[in-house]
Image (cartoon, rainbow, N blue to C red):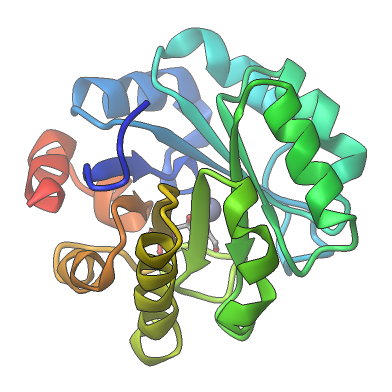
Length: 220
Ligand code: DX5
Ligand code: ZN
């Protein structure tokens, strides 16, 4: 298991060319990415619809990269088993969603997967504090989720990344701190300086002709 001080680069498939998704998945692996980030959107929790468990299952055989599945769904508990069966290596759910958060996190852990919790820019850090000893990844959204290509929300989100790092150190925990949204060659350094180690990027990686160079540059 990678420790929370190792920088992890996770391209978001949301920004890939879906007409050739197998090639795009292999492109990320060949470019030296560490994880593949899968942005699942239900059109209810967020104002967009992306893909479901069948798409995750279609991606699975094309890569050995860990599949980092991000459920932007109102009812992640209802569909959890399908995303587990599809081959996710880790699953992140939102604290704002309509489910028993502790129970959902327990089910993810019981399935042997990495267990993540996410909070949107408008959600205060204290909302996730009750769960920080039950997860191995905290995803601090750095945009309002729903679409790629948005601007990094530094003021609203970096204090929460810093607070998460402080809490982790003061409580002897070891969860990853992941950021997602507007992460590029400039903002990755800001996020890392505040304590983030898992960098999700769609536009800044899949939008580049030379993805390997972009991954290497983002690794710092
Ligand atoms: C939520 C999605 C996006 C995506 C990254 O909307 O989670 O943040 O992963 O999008 P970019 O990297 O293009 O901002
Ligand atoms: Zn995401």
